[in-house]
Length: 445
Image 1 (cartoon, helix red, strand yellow):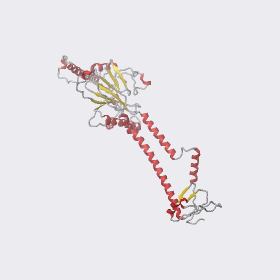
Image 2 (cartoon, one colour):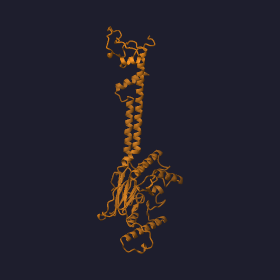
Image 3 (cartoon, helix red, strand yellow):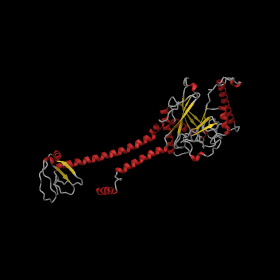
Image 4 (cartoon, one colour):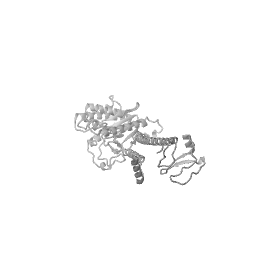
């Protein structure tokens, strides 16, 4: 039985201590002999002091070490524990950093990377005779549609939270990078407006104002859609339902207002062409700009289906050939012809279908249907950027991040985290190495 200052150095791994380090740690001069193995007949061979080293390997019977020499072994164990602690800290820091970086990219930076590629289109004059004239003032307008903010009746709370967060980040990023002067939302701002109570409606409006908050130089205007106030049997608005021609009181008032606006536009056009005014144009009427207007509405003008529509954000192939229902999916043929005849617009922008489409009416009047701005309705939302002057316009489309790509990034990050965890706990080692690791753990316990 060794005394309190004698012990045996037992280790399963080689350890080397130089003689100079041993002397410095213990203050005792090392013996200039190499200890012999147990039962060995070899004598002690003197070595030069600079060549002296003590090698301990498990299974050999070593000479007793002095108590002072224990300090070096304890110091080595302390360093080993410190190294293991640092490795754990670095591993934990790696996991946290990867998780945080993935979240920041998918929930903030991805919108900047995608929307940064969008730009305002340049307005080119319709004819070369105006090239030498002073450039007209350009109004920068952003068009989006069908946000469908969920209320308290429909939809899961997590779906509601996720979709509203996506729309808020996309809209606020677009405002910061593009800085539009005017924003139009072409209907269906809310999803449950026609069922909401006054209290729920007020709460939804407050939430909308927070999500689509504006900077000081930007204005926002919303066109009312069927999900905001209901269909024709509930309420009639020029921009959402327009003219049904069934003789109802509200329809008659709406038609009278549209006829009056059409008359004002015609008078302004006659004034510009210096033709003789009719008696109706001389009576103190409000003079509107003589240029053809842009018609903004929720419902598209009549078309049979989306079969002729193309583009990556158009309707899916299985839906393109489904016939549209008049007064439900699109305006009636009669109402569509009235609007075209009364206003003769240079451009029509609409929503409602949740998919993009470009149609040419009467061979000269383009209509663009804007897809939904909500990821709840489609995987790849988008919006329109318009540069508008008194006579010309130019449009470009800005696509938003595709949700499946964001989910792919999250999935890849999850796989990376799983591999890191498996590697850290040695679960990715070959079977024999893993078995030895498990056996060693059991023996240690």
